[in-house]
Length: 288
Ligand SMILES: C[S@@+](CC[C@H](N)C(=O)[O-])C[C@H]1O[C@@H](n2cnc3c(N)ncnc32)[C@H](O)[C@@H]1O
Image (cartoon, rainbow, N blue to C red):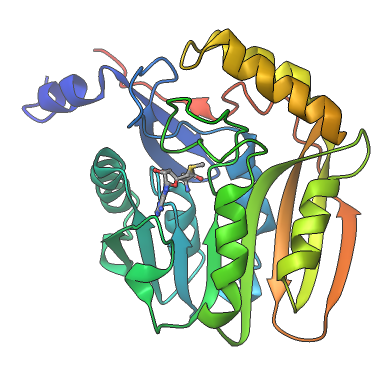
């Protein structure tokens, strides 16, 4: 065994090394129990990388809000971004992302900066050519203790709403934003997302919707299974969703440009199924 192999093996023993496209990304395993879990890879990251506007990102000054393992910032840097400023509130995530950026050869183009609950505050007064985010979007009952990467208010839209509010002031002329989120609605349409776009976004929005959908109840069942809240909290949310007509949750990519107000919804070219089940390939160090 080479002298580097032993510390590397020890460091990775309780982690997950994922391959996504040509990237290698270390995350926590799904069973890491505390709220500072570093977000493992699901279909949403693949969806995001497939949807990167590569012509817009080449040479761009990029902002990511919610860096996590770094997977999206690394993808942007590898696609030719000039520099990525990446905000994160979870100290463990910053450590993982730094390691991952180095391992994928882009550490010199990613600046990791402390995030803030007033999202854009750490970059106040700055504008970017490409703003991107995979924000926390799991519906989370009030008072429930939940992962930093997922807690997003009762309909999973609280973080997204703050993002929308600050977006125009942080995009350059001709700049672009790309945001992936899950959003409640009826069986066919992410109605809650459309309402939010109409409320806050003055420019041109294109929503690419994954045809695969899940019921709100199934998502609540999964939440209940994680034991981070009480049965009453989860049931309270189910009841509220029934009242408000939130029957399904849709995985969507939002593409946004400054310019004339317009809103389009179209299906994604690819269907992303099983988006809770870690599709990224797992890599292990071979033992000799
Ligand atoms: C859904 S995860 C996405 C992580 C990564 N971008 C990915 O796609 O795998 C959301 C991330 O946002 C971070 N976050 C939560 N609140 C934040 C804030 N106010 N500012 C910056 N990052 C935040 C979480 O810690 C988490 O890492």
